[in-house]
Length: 138
Ligand code: T46
Image 1 (cartoon, rainbow, N blue to C red):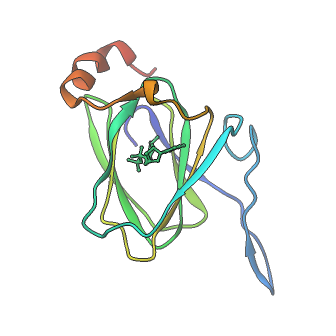
Image 2 (cartoon, rainbow, N blue to C red):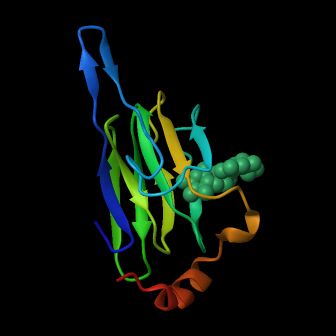
């Protein structure tokens, strides 16, 4: 994964009835969960995201179907295919992200460490690239 992003795996509690995944703050994800949202009924040709966050930690899990996530830290780019219910992408750095190639049945769950704030968004890609050097991840 590029700097600022990690793959995260979840434990499946499975038995003869099926499967269950539990996600707890500061245990299964490395932050306190403040907000949860999910994206569904997405137009297959839509590209969502197209922004970075100034200060946000989030985990994205495709709990049904599949989609791609383009991740860009200003120096490197990577596209990750999300289709597993027991693994997701942890974005903690200053990362431009775009979500695309949604399957008809895609449900993309996102767990976030902060309340919604429009002021936290960076929508200008040129500004993002110009400021990425100030957000280098160790
Ligand atoms: C991100 C990617 C992965 C709210 O009112 N509260 C919320 O918590 C969110 C996330 C959105 N909204 C409203 C704001 C817009 O009117 O829902 C509408 C759609 O949101 P947006 O255009 O930001 O959706 P995406 O899919 O482009 O981006 C979202 C998140 O906003 C963003 O933080 O990283 O998913």
